[in-house]
Image (cartoon, rainbow, N blue to C red):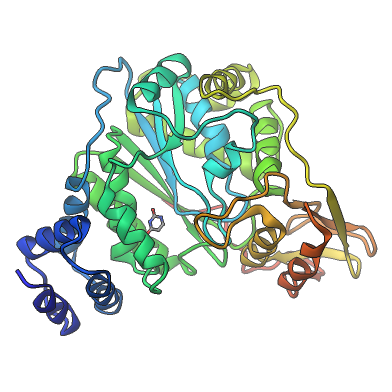
Length: 423
Ligand code: URA
């Protein structure tokens, strides 16, 4: 095979054969196809697309580039959830122990935040002592001890995707439905979960800005999972405003613990419970405990504490706090009509909650506490949100990012998406 011929085929809107896809993904992973050639192919795919067969072949080639995990020694069904990412999306933190408390095992490989979206591992690393990197043997120990494990994917899992994602990140080729779907699903299929619930976010703070694109991404991923023998369901959920009232690593851990204690913001609770029910159903757990019950009776909190401890963390430790804060107050009285997820996400990123380059550290304490959500009444001069940062120098650029982020009106905007848009 020849890389130039494969690039030209896709450039001219042709269809790549299974053998061509297997070869180019394998050769790129081993260093036999150059970055500049793969960049050109990725751009051709972004512009001209791939059909379902090509996407399935691309996904299988990425799975075969590494190991496939196996949970068959466990005595309960496995279930996982993947969110396509958003602002204030801390749902994995309460959800994994909740589903474990209801009777399924949750082996969840998670990622770090990039750009304005937060990453589950960055959030959990705000807990003193907690470790994201585990060997496969340690993963099994944690899951046996607590029912759930949330950790980083090892280097052996879909290495083709690791290399391709890093290249896409610097070549403007992230926003392609075939490439996003195959990237996410190759990792989830290689992870070996028996069932998977996809939380496909839609709105300004998500990859998919409109419902039609989100639906297309969801259908593509469900087909890939189903064909690979993973029972896969997708929900489309709102990311036009942030989820919950906390955006930022330690702030989101704190909010998650409130949910596990039976409180927390209603949207976070509603989505956590809905996703838990979907996961238990997809996993086929017979006679599962009701998730709402497990939040009330403390069993989800017990699973959380066991999971954090099993990964070296102290569930009772005081979480890091940022040294400086600034209040943003309401310029007039009325109802908060909108609150733009992307702008809030970018502001939190600039406060230090996210990173500009993969190797940068994040601040555990930085972020935003929202005192009002769309639909809430606000009074002139009262706090709308509190910005937290380690250095005061960060506030100016964060405040600039919030320019036009909200609207105070007579009533909530009619354009807001329902929390669960579709299943
Ligand atoms: N998340 C992934 O894992 N891959 C993508 O391409 C986009 C989001």
